[in-house]
Image 1 (cartoon, rainbow, N blue to C red):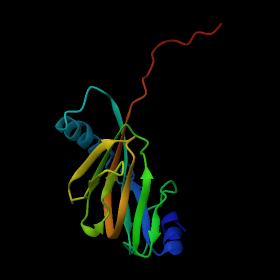
Image 2 (cartoon, helix red, strand yellow):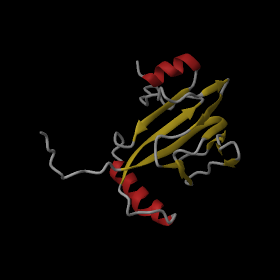
Image 3 (cartoon, rainbow, N blue to C red):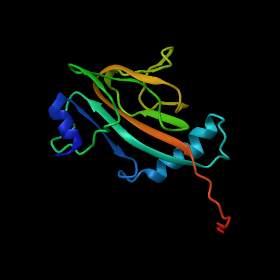
Image 4 (spheres, one colour):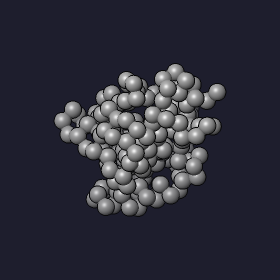
Length: 164
């Protein structure tokens, strides 16, 4: 039984994710992030980034019978009836890109630092530093997001290792 099905049995909801790599979209989303989004925002494109991401689904009903997304055990969703919210957290990234892919939900805005609230709008993205505290406000319905995490590539060294 998958984590998503186990979660659904436990709370009656469907929560899960599937990686962009599994979807065959790694190259496309990397190009989107590095060649379109970062330059459009005037961010430094000379830095080499690794792009990792997932399509996230949280909803109050199953997508289909053999739901195969897997729930992320790191996500600590608060669930009350058919409402879900995600408490304050920071992402493990330098830059986070969060794109709304569907509009069959209410609520679910992102509240940054408990000060600035940004509503999700279909086909619109929210870009923020990964270390900025944020949370997802209570939402109902079926919500899909494409979340991309950008981290600086680790430097590679051509220097020889010398031991003595």
